[in-house]
Amino acid sequence: MKNVLFLHGFNSSPQSLKAQQTQQYLKQYFPQVKFHCPQLALTPDKVIKQLTPYFTEIKGGSKLQSWGIIGSSLGGYFATYLSETYAIKAVLINPAIKPYELIANYIGEQINPYTQEVYQIKPCYLEDLIALEQHHITKNNYMVMVQTGDEVLNYQQAVEKFHASTLIVQPNGDHSFVNYKAMLPTVVEFLQLNG
Image (tube, rainbow, N blue to C red; front, side, top):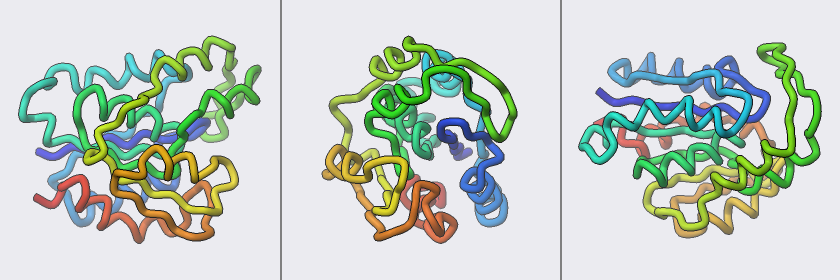
């Protein structure tokens, strides 16, 4: 069985539009693919502890080839860590490359608009993000999709880091990745879910 792990972005949830579109597309066209999209924990260290069980039991085995990861924004940063740790293909959508630089502006109380959960971002959050940074990437394991109109992240950081990977740069758009649904056949093909 094929599996897809979708990692949502900062202050988002499994109810986000891209997560929902991915789930619906797979259900309609690839019902044999199991879709996983957990509500991510509120700190980076807890996110990794939360996601590690998906892969630890199969590390080093052929079953890892049955997994693919899709990560959006901050989820793309976590997806990169997991991809490098477990050698899994990943699709990154407008990924955060240096999220600790941006998150520094959010220290203090936050409210997740999807879940209404109130939580605190502390300086250790930034340290945990820095600890997860991957300086060397396995270029063949990534397809990176960015739009130049991203108003939250500098898309050029992703282009620079993943220049040797499969890179899709679309003009205009925004951080949500406009018309993401149209890219789902390409995502499926890259993750080899149709095999």
